Length: 238
Ligand SMILES: [Zn+2]
Image 1: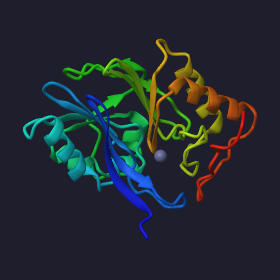
Image 2: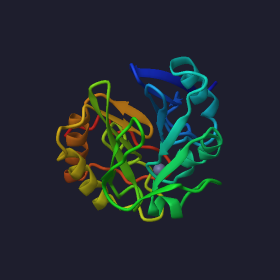
Image 3: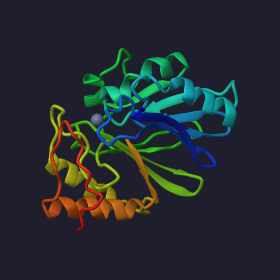
């Protein structure tokens, strides 16, 4: 019986996700969700996965962009292997890696970062201008990215939070639950508010509701710090 299914989904006209879906909640996913934004002449990716997704990402770009189109940049949310090992294939395909300084120094990949983020800033990447927002907590150098795609404000948050409002994996050096909460409050205060929250292992189409729920879970002491089995908080009321 399979425990994981590889999938590619078109989320809106120009936004795609390639990833692994857990068919068994205890299954270990070696690859995060890779988000692909396909523009007129180029494409952008958020995270690179753990090394198994590149052929599916490339095929998506061939089909919905063109075979000549390249991914110019990968926006890395943090350096964990399930998000960063796949950088090797992305960089061979022509991409540059954008990362926080901390993630670049703790990168679980054979590749190096090419463009280092020191603070919050709007990036000028050709036809895309994503906003990089420092959101420490899952790791000290975790970054979220905000970008309007197809008239929706999309917030890419890596493993800061899961789509049930619970914490991402808590076993990394520098994990800090109090910082996760502060980062969530920072994201919730941004204007205009985000429409979709595109996390490292799931998509939520009401970002404001998810941020509110995650903050409430934290403040009512309902978060579970975990490293092995992922707790399911979807039924926990706040
Ligand atoms: Zn992680």
